Length: 609
Ligand SMILES: Nc1ncnc2c1ncn2[C@@H]1O[C@H](COP(=O)(O)OP(=O)(O)OP(=O)(O)O)[C@@H](O)[C@H]1O
Image (cartoon, rainbow, N blue to C red; front, side, top):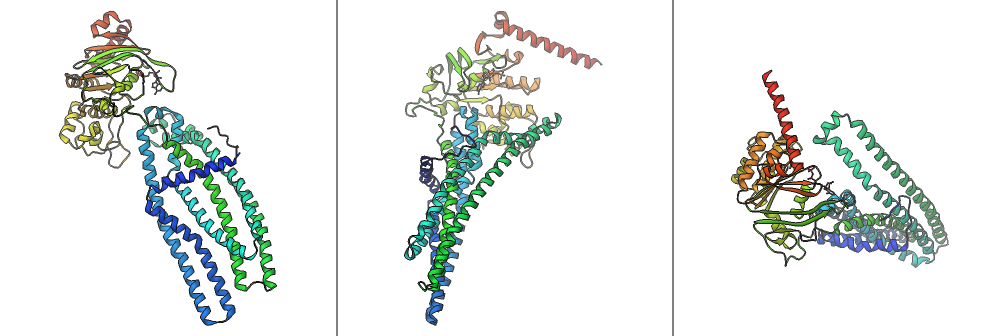
């Protein structure tokens, strides 16, 4: 959508499109609780009739007083009291149902948005436009749909009241209506324009709003706070935060001003018209054409028309503006979801992986034309442990993500048990693989959840959770109900390496046929690293093990080492084979050995001091 902040051009088509959103929105809202939905609609109709009943009540009472008949006065008084009581009861019920509905709507729509997020493919989360859409939806979902519903309800009540008041005036002088109706119709177009501009401003804000959220995140989270303090970034970050938000405040004030001026002009014009009609009513009363009660009735009808036409105008403005936002919600809910299988009926099941073949795999990310993997060929069989080594950015993690089918790749280049990954049931395939990602998650939840998430179906199996913890050297914490991290009460913070061990335990907890560890030792001390890799080698004896490592002293424990460089495999073999025939590998190894020797000498010198 190409939008400009100052652009408030509105066509009749825009308005019709916006009105078309109303039934769609109502269907969405109705699903929350159909019974309450219909009760609220019914109550709104009654709310529209209530002022007219009260009007008749007061008109009758005044006319009855004129007749000076006690029986007529008493019955008019009783009618008047009941009319007011009716109004009160209806408004109390409406308030209750509206509050109840708002709570339910907020909860259920948030749930819907969250549920939608879980169904999106990974590539959407690497796309700034989708993030902006999500930001808009998350910001507005808690209140916008309800605002739209309220606008619709209030329009229903206002139309009923307006229509009934109009009937009263038509009976008296039909031409008066022309004055009262034409003015709001002319102004309504300007209110649409204001709505359009307000929406444009808010739409264009999403990327900066996300930046503003990120800046406040940097200032308020434990993992970022340390650097903010150390590098004294508070002033710099606050300045950026202020600049963005100052701009928002300025824009908002400008919009408020514009809206206030328009509303003021409308009200002045409207008052002139109403007072003209009022003068006509008074002249008719003085000429004896109408009774005193009818004078009051007509004045009240006049006021109801004036108030309700203004109300309809305001609600049309907010309905139009909010419908544009709701459109965002629908666009988000319509985002293409992850297609696990092209055709569920044809997807082939898999419960154990015995062999992986990669044939001529070439890949670029959807957001980046650069070829990240070039003509990769590799075969791994059950019982083999493979280490992948290579410089930063050579494509190691990308290869792992493709093995997990986290990106769509239409060409058949990855095969499990000789079946193309594209023909396999994705959910079943993923169940066969356990992974420790390089950017693993530190769940600010219980220890049980941190490990048990490896296989959610066995999260209550304490014995096996403990076994996985033992394998991953998680010996520093025992109680599975310990709250981890510092975000919630009584949380225990772990060191970087301890968190990594917990994440490794999560991978080990899964009964998989392929275990993949992406840089398992990045935060581990050498002893822990050795123990974890030994355990990994042992666990994958009759399975498939793949690990990515920057330490060749670790990689050499694998049966086969794959050397990657700039998206290509430039060598496959054992440690000794590669030392003999792969230049890059030999240089990497010499450098690592040199570094280790320097480190060793330094430690020896220190020890002898
Ligand atoms: N989500 C992504 N979208 C676009 N490009 C990406 C994405 N992830 C990685 N890349 C690019 O793909 C290339 C390979 O990245 P990858 O993470 O696979 O490398 P790596 O070998 O695992 O590196 P490292 O050793 O630093 O972890 C890099 O040039 C990177 O910029």
